[in-house]
Image (cartoon, rainbow, N blue to C red):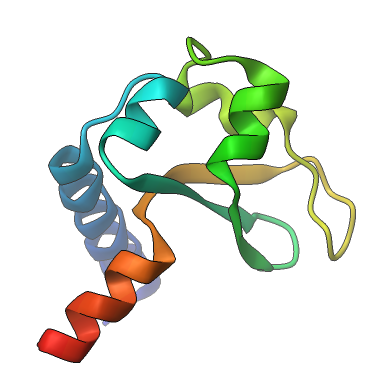
Length: 99
């Protein structure tokens, strides 16, 4: 497969996952037990941002798609950070144990 096909497949997978999680504001993250997955577009570093910290700094009505504009990579310092809703780590672990 060439890179365009793999890129399209990855985009489609992420869109399906995002649609399943449907959150619009930071307050929705807590209600839906959803966290924020962050990935640096420069170095590829990945991390999960604590929702409670984001709520304290940005407020409950801050739009989830805009979170990345306020982030900086902890590895390389780049401000080119992508963010998306993601199931919280403990929920993923319990699903893995069951499945």
